[in-house]
Amino acid sequence: MNITDVRVRKVAKEGKMKAVVSITIDDEFVVHDIKVIDGEKGLFIAMPSRKAADGEYRDIAHPINSDTRERIQKIILKKFEEVMEAEPEMVQADA
Image 1 (cartoon, rainbow, N blue to C red):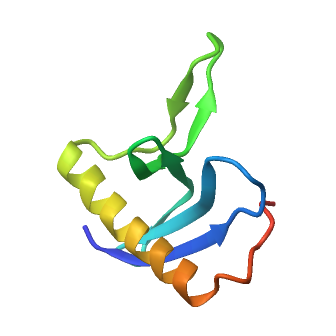
Image 2: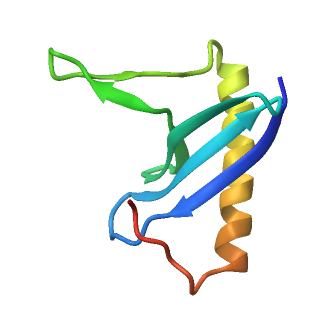
């Protein structure tokens, strides 16, 4: 599996969520709404999720193992940092 594209939309609102990301896998499959969160231990990603009937949030799409999650997170956070360095003054509102 190769992540062939990463698109970062910075969030203008104050808070822990810093960006919403879409990734393309092997130029064939896209996952939208991956969130970049600023947590107590630094930046991390949260996979797209929805609220279930019991009030809990469940991931809609997610890696099967921790190695894949770490690889995806590393690629996304690298791209996020590049975007922040390149365009610090430009902030796009969360749609």
